[in-house]
Image (cartoon, rainbow, N blue to C red; front, side, top):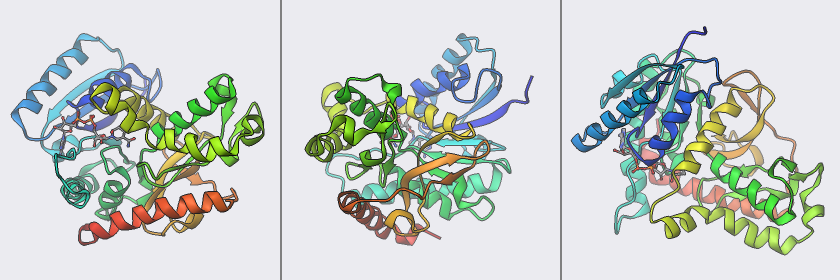
Length: 327
Ligand code: NAX
């Protein structure tokens, strides 16, 4: 039996948490032979902590053989202690009449604190994945607090957008989902994101030749993927939760699987025309479990360059709103 790994999850009593924790405990994220200890962190709010107690009871009631312990806390120093994986799902939602700048600042404060504590108390091999929105900028803020953990350990999730794009291409082409490969998300997890269809393949052929409808690819396809979150809120009255949790399972599973190619939001370092100091979605290949290299070989056409410029501008603007929070 392998040694259990410690997985810290913030926002554990929230919607995404309720779909996510059971998948982690069942082995879907780290594999069927990897025991886990869940370190569940909630906001210091009585109702949230009470709900967390209920979620922990349900985890117990699943009798998952791989689940070796559950920590429940509102203290990040306890929750992130010796964590190998820190999944930052909790965030403050946008309230009525709230400006985007205020949302960025309010969440920024949470991610400053969490970044500092993770850097101080998490395991030496800790990896951090940010889901709470605005995910890219929150990730940048958390990473900026770290002195011990390198910036490449901090990634934000754009996998839900990748999964959405893959499904839309498969449906349009009338093929099985698994026939669609190499569809990657560039930029921000927001409607400005760019699902780069020009490099995707369907049954090994360029997606652009199989679908052969540039107007659809540049228009409705990009729009459907970019606005899918809003469409789900309109239909369900609540934001995506099960699909977001599933995407985080995929994000981490790909990140621990050498050879996997997938989209992560990472420190750009100036690649693909992104500002060097923003966290932007781009294609990566996992090298060793938890580590990756950015795939830099894709050439961008004028349409792709204009889409990347727009999502980069949004990331740079977000960065300027929180400039005083970045170390
Ligand atoms: P919920 O509001 O259901 O749950 C959030 C939970 O976080 C709450 O239980 C709250 O008490 C907790 N929380 C707030 N501040 C905290 C803190 N400082 N420490 C610990 N816990 C804290 O939201 P949910 O639907 O679960 O969504 C969570 C986040 O994911 C939101 O920011 C949401 O916008 C974001 N999303 C990101 C996606 C992505 O692809 N990157 C997609 C799905 C989702 O919209």
